[in-house]
Image (cartoon, rainbow, N blue to C red; front, top):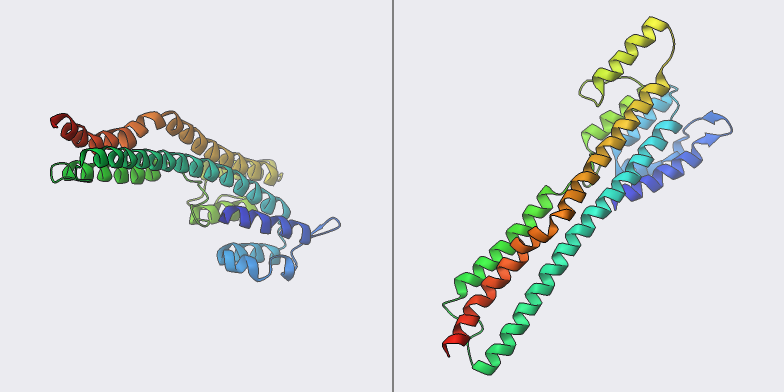
Length: 242
């Protein structure tokens, strides 16, 4: 899983990027690995390091976010696999039943009369699977790699300031005005605000996933039960006519 691999690489960067109490990033901290996985992320860290911006807290925050994203992706993948497994079991059972009955009755496996029902069943299974995959949540960080919003979030975390189009832009600007008014630095509060936003996004995705877990029986009725009835209905009709 890409987010797990990136989190592991960031953990190595944290270990290599510290020397005593000095927060620094030697060129070997990420090496070609990070550049290969995400060139934009590598450039963000490199530019921040050259400007003297401490990196440890931002690397740790991104690593935690990636860990939460991996948990959400595992939950989504588990639900997808469960649905596919039940589809496979139902299809296998229907085929076995058809074969058992047809061998005894000497009927065609798919007669001209039930060909349309079988095709409709297949179409329902495919549509239910595709639709389920499309409505399940994905981490705000990205599905297969960090999306642009994740880069903006990290850049804002590194700078401890609001960026156009970034998360919590209004709240961060308010903290910036408070800094100017009071003459104190609120970098820690800004970063905590960004980390809290990140956590809330992941929690929202998990709640969405739990709702679909609760709806799975209904989804199975549509994507598994009805197709299996369509597969068997003509066969039952043929048997009753004999």
